[in-house]
Image 1 (cartoon, rainbow, N blue to C red):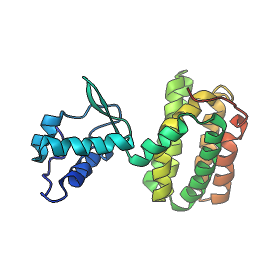
Image 2 (cartoon, rainbow, N blue to C red; image 1 turned 135 degrees about the vertical axis):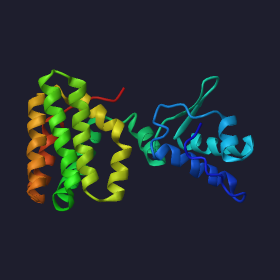
Image 3 (cartoon, rainbow, N blue to C red; image 1 turned 180 degrees about the horizontal axis):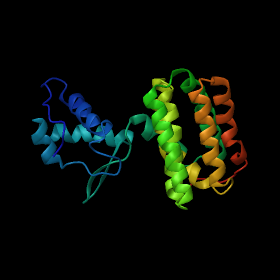
Image 4 (cartoon, helix red, strand yellow; image 1 turned 60 degrees about the horizontal axis):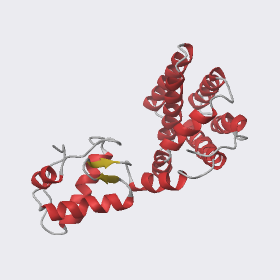
Length: 229
């Protein structure tokens, strides 16, 4: 059963149900890849007809947040509409342009983080750097990849710029993909050390150095010429 069960008002029912569905997705109650409750369950929970519920679900299927698989149910495919749209666009994009986009966003976010990061933000970055170092020592390549993505996401969160955070969130799948595709170009130790240097600049409030280090962090792998599968 859904967690958010507040019943919508009778006017503009479809739009209100769409908002309720989005809320369950955005707050993480229905994670990407998860199957949402059945049409009957949701209609009962929200106090609407199955026709109204079906229209709301189809609206989110249309934008790519949900996917209905005949005989299996409806599944979450993206946290937000922008994530769905950007994900579809980048699915066939070459690797180099995506890396260049990451470089631009992450370097600017690092500069902003140096100026705005809270104690909690810095703690999140430290935790990611520590997780990356631990995974590297254990030879856990997937763990190193996850920690790297976690570190860069923490920097973007610390930027305090909502549009930048939303856009970067939409890139999360592509960020993981680029890290996995390029990790053989530079050894894991190099990336862990690079993260530590960026973190130090942010902790010191040195926006210029943070920007330069984040920009240089991806430079060694920008010669990769692959396509996403």
